[in-house]
Image (cartoon, rainbow, N blue to C red):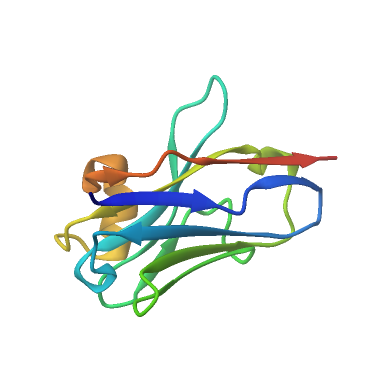
Length: 128
């Protein structure tokens, strides 16, 4: 059964770093666009970063220069390296897979509707 499993979340102080991983079983990573999304309590889900099938990336303005999305096709794993974390980065983070219909920039703009498969999420809490 295909599934996406996130890990690496946790609690960190402002200015710290975390690396999220998303293990994709039953998927061939190179055949999909991949994204990281987050949702804080009482807020709408927002796209954080996308990497498309050609390896192009796109980031939300709020995380540019601090977060890096990457993938390892051989390990079938997606990553999100997060640095210089801020309290406003606190949220549940989800990885998602979608068809290679859009470029990374387009997929981030379309948002969740560009992705069909979702993980269960991993919590990130940043304290000030």
